[in-house]
Image 1 (cartoon, rainbow, N blue to C red):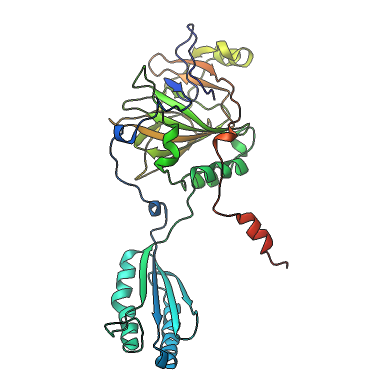
Image 2: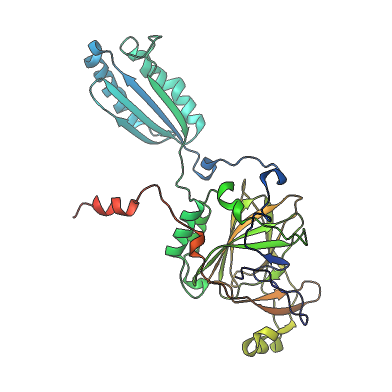
Length: 376
């Protein structure tokens, strides 16, 4: 991945690195799009990446003179709650001390939670009426109650890059755990404060997309692609690399094609002199079209055994996608759907950009796990 714009040779059609018609940029204050310049979008919430489960917490505290009776009724209720199976995924009961209890119950959906409130919870609270402190109405209401979506284990951009550094290695796509990496990439919750510094546009051509390197090493490149309204890539392959793509902002369409037949002259030249490999290919056949959007299907994956592809922004708004190429692309074939021609584009080399990502976790999880491991 180059970190500066590259010009195409005059003798061949305009080349592309990962996708055609691209400008490669290092973010600068002049190129960044301000929040005001970008179209408004529906806010995306962190918990949309989760299961949709609802967590319900209730805290009850007995009056000093009612502790024994309170404890007996709580014990009975806890036993019943533990036995619940319908609409429930987890039940926990915390007993801080005699006279206090916290119930933490997780429901499959909001509908199940509301039914619980109207049924078992109301029934239980009726048996606590008059026994509780911090219960001004005397109806058994909890001293504290809160419910909300179960928060998923989502990535920040830095933690995602750290995961990729630990788990994406090898010289071709066959060495990758594609499913696991795809799942982890879709766990990234894109915050504008994280990725907006990588957003750049080409000042000379408002329809060109840009490639902005976030991190790169010998095993993979992690790149933010910025797609202005109407931007369309070339149809291209990925040599021996894996290509993961996730939606960050806006909507793009990935159009996949079956790998066409290539003429002998092209294949021979590609082996001996790839920079000058130009030839013809068979008819390009569309095998799949996927709409990638932060509110729907967020990710896709491609390699040459799956097919080749093109990415399009069919909307009138800016779109951004995160791409991981593993290993980094050194060359790629560019296909012309109109002329039936194919040529090879050699990618410029790129140096590792480790300084661009500084992982700063909330605390050292590995240290905790190593210290608090009980030997068998």
